[in-house]
Amino acid sequence: MAAALENHPLEPFLPGNAVLLMLGSFPPQRKRWSMDFFYPNLQNDMWRIFGHLFFGDKEHFLCPGKKSFDKARIVSFLQAKGIALYDTATTVRRLQDNASDKFLEIVEPTNVHQLLKQLPCCRAIVTTGQKATDTLRATLDVAEEPPVGGKTAFTTDGRTLWLYRMPSSSRAYPLALEKKATSYRLIFSDLGLI
Image (cartoon, rainbow, N blue to C red; front, side, top):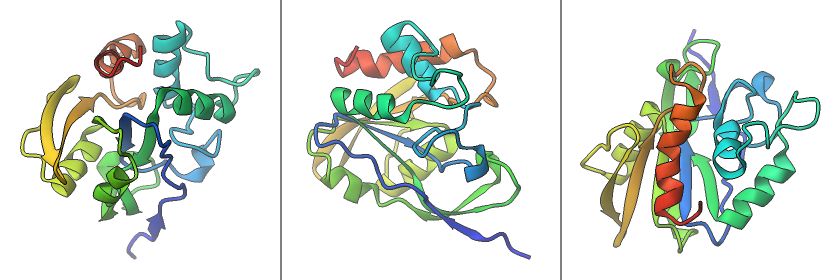
């Protein structure tokens, strides 16, 4: 029996002032969520990376008691910095009962052209993981794949943007949080956000 189709459970988060669009692959199953927002799994280190880089405290975005992330604080921070979030897939099939990109079949990729039309100030896109990078490159016809922790320029819809390829923030990706944060610092430094 084929796995059921899953549609993206969240609306794109697109602040009008966004200079950066961050794209993962697809959210984990809802049973793994600690909040109703992007990177909701407590086992994912994205918000710890942000806390470490911007506040010198990897637990900055955790709620007291530390069983969930603080969505309100994250949203306020992202709006202030001009950081948009979504994923490279809008419809998927999970080939196994987990959040691994390896077992994620992308049925419908996100229309990133449409997202970018809503982000006139956007200067860069970051993909967080190989599946997201592969999907974005196919969607926007980006010829050159940047190395992990690196960037490449590309042109789409008459705009030249930077594509940053960052390591996955999942703990399944075998790299210490501080080393992942060092890679992410490149984006925020280049864009003058840090």
